[in-house]
Image (cartoon, rainbow, N blue to C red; front, side, top):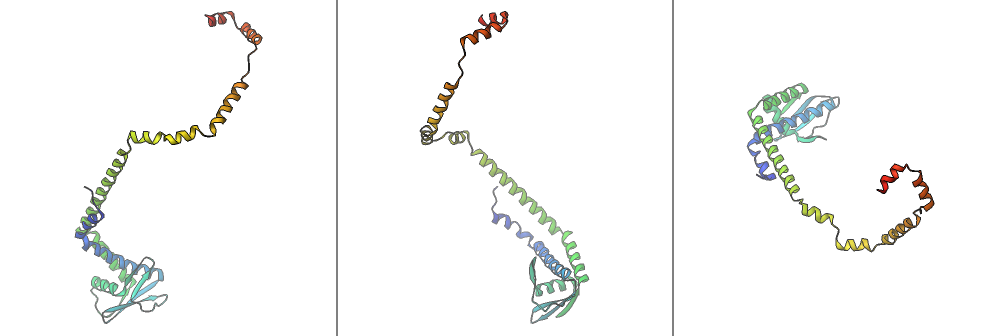
Length: 212
């Protein structure tokens, strides 16, 4: 059965919870990556009126920012604080997490997802979609091959009458006639005397058999 992009995407709706969990871990991995590159030891969060800011403390102190920006992606400080507090159970409007704590949280959340039934079901669904898509592409290839019939090949191989007329009436025809005539004129003539001498040099048995 042919599937469309909308149908394939719709089959993943049942796995949104698992996809959201994977997204959350990826956002924490982004924080971990930034801290590792900057050699930071502490991520300090401060919440004010519902919105949070993030300061990274390490070799350099970064100014408070409501957004963590990196070439690999962006995530808000409020989202990161919510994820870290949910995973660690630490509450408060001013909270600091060490790089070791963040690494432990990322590892625990990753292991939880990998061992979940939800990820196993998502993997099965993805493999099924990949198999259906491969079959669909194979059917398209077979249809394209069948459309190339012998009649179509023959039609493509035979030149159009106009093309044949252009070739026959082209400047190549006089040149071809000139080459043929020059070859006929250049062919060496055999001297009758030389021919007789060549025949005389042949053994008698061979000459007799040739005449017979």
